[in-house]
Each structure stands twice: as C-alpha cells, then as structure tokens.
Image (cartoon, rainbow, N blue to C red):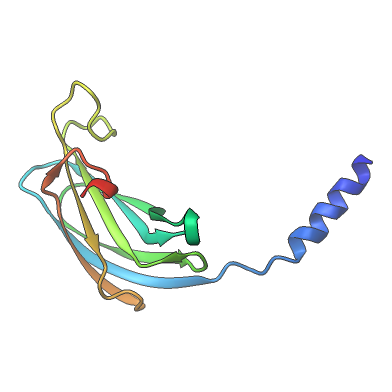
Length: 137
C-alpha cells in the first residue's frame, strides 16, 4: 500500500497549474523621527475567497538599516490575493521583535500602493503609530 501513495501524490500534484507571478519593481521611502532598523512587510491587501477572505497576507519581508529609501523586485503571487500594501515597524531597541511587553513603544505604519498593479511602483511609508500591526492602523 505504501508503494502506491507516492505515485498517486505525484500524479495529483502534476494536475496543478504553475503559480502565476506578477513582478513588481518597487522603490520608496520610510519616514520616521526615530532611529533604528525597519522591517518592511509586502502584503496582499486582501487574501482568500468569500467567507475565508482576510486582510493583509504577507508576500515578502525586507529589513533596511534605518528610515531611508528602499528598492527591489517583488514577485507577487496571483490567485486569491488582491491589492498591494506595505507595512513597516521600526526596531528602536534592536531586539528584533515589535513591541515586546516591558519595552518602549515602537513605531509602525501602513501604506496602500495606489500604483498597483503596475510593474513599477513607488511607496511612501510614514511610521507614526505606536505598537500596531497592519490590521490596527
């Protein structure tokens, strides 16, 4: 019986089509009156279908040394996701975690990418909200 499982799984996975990827060249700036590394999350603004739809599914992440400019290439999976947003938070104490209990508040921000879907987009992200995830901003 175990010998039949692998060929069956292989046959089933061959029926699935390849993932469709939309390449986006992004550039932008992060604005903050604080200093510290910034983690950026590139997000589908909406993800899922019907009653399972949710906001803000992470596509990719990027760390930059400080609030400054950033650029790169993002491969956006197509399918059940739509829209593009960028969330960021600033690691003011250098611990790599956002707003751990007992630490000073760290700034966050969210920007909707209005140029999307285009293959070249620009983003301005303002970090001005303390200790919030993308859903709370």
